[in-house]
Image (cartoon, rainbow, N blue to C red; front, top):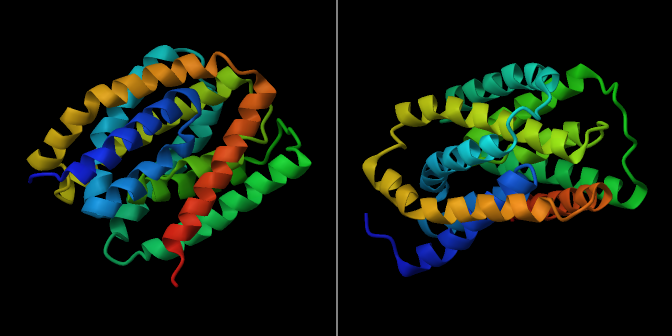
Length: 247
């Protein structure tokens, strides 16, 4: 399938931003990639093109954050996230994407404003059930539109994690669930030659984005980092609300 020049004008910045976000800001603003590409090719194909690119970025990011992840959090979060992916696949033909995006957007905006205006109370004993629920939602929203960042951050941000622990844990989390998503995406016929070729052409942009993200995150301190994550969560939430608004 021949892509238009407008598609490439949207795809290059979308993939670049995603790479920067995945390696330096825990997924964050990279959620805009699918909505941006969907302007030209529709959400289903946009998500299919992005999945191999996300896995490529994950591999680069895992190498950079090797050994710094919180395995206890991953053991808590990964199983319910995989369950969310399975639910997304089973409900694929029935799910209302607009309602999901609207609900996720409202949650993201509410949490971001609370954190920015009042500050986040750090709590190392956050209830595991909250983590499992957030991970389940993250798996579901990630399956539909690679939008797992907001629900994951909803749980991780209040924890007393260093910048390195936060980023490494998020990178490992998304690496696992993106690999799991390959199976249902393949079953649904989304990993076809056309989509894979487009992804291959965008791979150098993805590589550049990851490298830029690693450089950027080293130059900011912990407090600024948290404020940037919350600000991105606010922007993401507003974008999700706009995408899901029925009027």
